[in-house]
Image 1 (tube, rainbow, N blue to C red):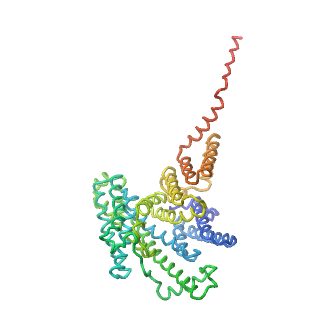
Image 2: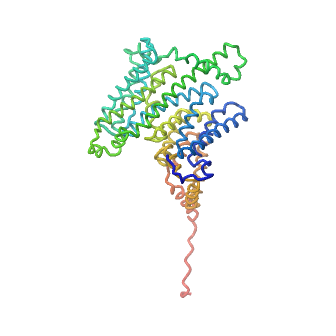
Image 3: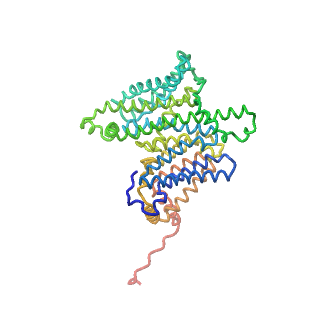
Length: 498
């Protein structure tokens, strides 16, 4: 992400690069959604403009000072630190808290899948093991929450090493099948009659008392929560307003706890990738035989990767129980915390801490944005699954490095270079190509309007992954149909034959 001194000169330093423009556009879209429920268009526009403008000014200042793209991380950290005050209600704060918790899971999964190249589909069991360990210790043995969380993370860490043992003899789809067994069996074990007294069976376990902000922190957050009281409750009795202030203070306190842990986890993941362990993991992923010949103990590093990944999953599970205050077997099924994390890690970008953060935002904020944009009677779960599949198709075929890797790549281009390449690419395509694309878009819109948005999403996926010459070839074939049935004119006779 480093930029050379010749990359930006004079006034160009104040103009966002192509990658920065994408980031600011995403921030604009996200902020617009954040304040879209106010019903006040003036507040919506001003608030969105102010957030994006402040991010731009901070980014320009840090970039001029550092001459690289680390301003992304600084602005991102500042916005995350201000999230409780940028949010409109406690629900948005809760979603941001889940984003931080889910990012820890993706950081751990990135160690196994992104760095070491091992496919693991059993992380849902690791998260569930940690969450249930905390719940059982607190509910049945009356442990304090913090010691119970530490013990649960240690148990998950040890179990992660055991889950990595199959990686010594298996690889690829065989290892995925071996690890998916843990994710399939874990919810069934929780429902057994012999353990229902501890796990609660299908009803799950509930945390009766979440951690409360201490003394001066609680008073500060309660005072800051006055502006967050819903308009319809500002004239309610004092005890109702007090409950609203306490609710905001507790949500903000849990958010900042998860924010601190996620910041440390992200920094550790970033340093791990550049350490001796990280280079060994990458060597095992790229060429295991060559790594062995160089003296790397591949068995040790494979199991260690699973252990580190389980450590992150254990922390995510403990924080998940602390913030949600409820666990049930259905919360840790195969898709929610085993397959979806893999999908969104690929979408965000493998082997990159930034990709894990992008994937976490896509997984937790994506459904909320889809629900607001779709406004359809179609089953939401089906629509979300279709869009997830479409994003996977687009990323795997068009952006192999993921969203984060693509941002880093386009940041190496200036606007002049991007404009020139886009112009050359556009002019090199025949008219038939663009007509075919227009026909394809019309077909997609027609399918979406006639059969429903889910089928429209699938049609869009076919258009995106189709080779660029397919639509042009279809158009040329349709064009050639005009000549069918038309009598072929005889060739004119030579001049000397007349």
